[in-house]
Length: 94
Ligand SMILES: [Zn+2]
Image (cartoon, rainbow, N blue to C red; front, side):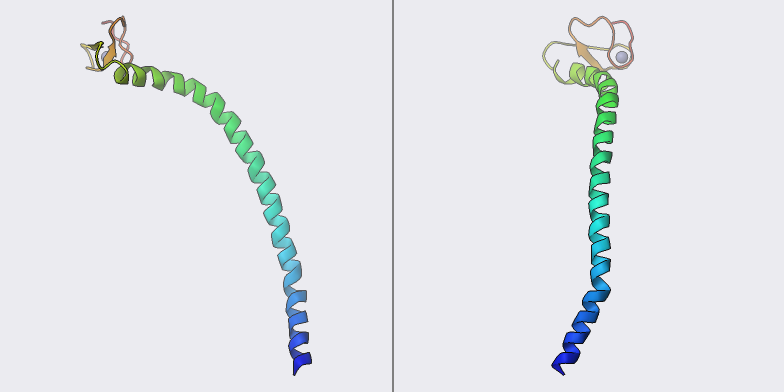
């Protein structure tokens, strides 16, 4: 009875151990590949983020930080810096 259980346990280990090894290996490969992907995405996002970030920051900063000293665009109504000559939103001359 005990030997049968042990035999079954050995069989289960023999069946599942290679699978577990494969799972662990794939997890490791996935982890390494994921890390490389993250590095690539971070590099790409840093490049594209700088390009898009400067444009959005211009409109966001002009509308957010100029609550006291701001000029409202006559064309689109967006708030701009007090000394702004062109609208940060629609580029109309103020
Ligand atoms: Zn405007």
